Length: 69
Image 1 (cartoon, one colour):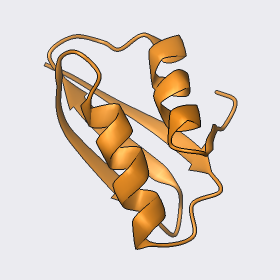
Image 2 (cartoon, rainbow, N blue to C red):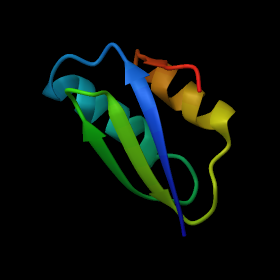
Image 3 (tube, rainbow, N blue to C red):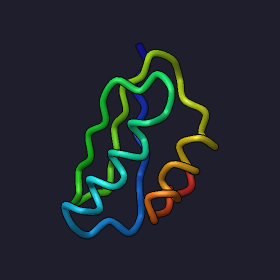
Image 4 (spheres, helix red, strand yellow):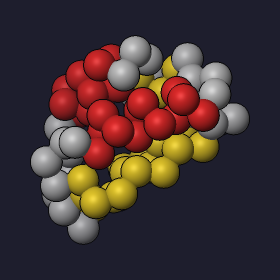
């Protein structure tokens, strides 16, 4: 099991949270996604560490940006 936390820029409402959660949840091996709207923190539990490019692509597909790490 692997837990990673990312910062997503641009989320302002519950719909934003749902969109990001849905896109990241579709990545292979993802078990859970928790989003903290006020801070933009997205915590992802997955079977194995996720590829950052895949996470970035999922966030962009939802219409938001991943903060530089």
